[in-house]
Image (cartoon, rainbow, N blue to C red; front, side):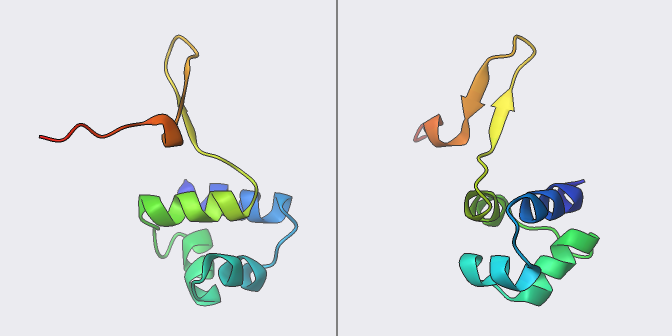
Length: 77
């Protein structure tokens, strides 16, 4: 499913795989692998791809409250 999101974000941003790869500082074959489902990005890479396509990743709970990934703080144990 992530593969379709990456491809859609890239196309909506008007970027080729090569252009997105350069913006994200990764190989264009890696972008291709993500879009075909051959590879899956870690969360940090996915955030970077979204940012470079002009998107942000949010989580929405059942009450429709938005949790923006940048507002999450990690509690030290």
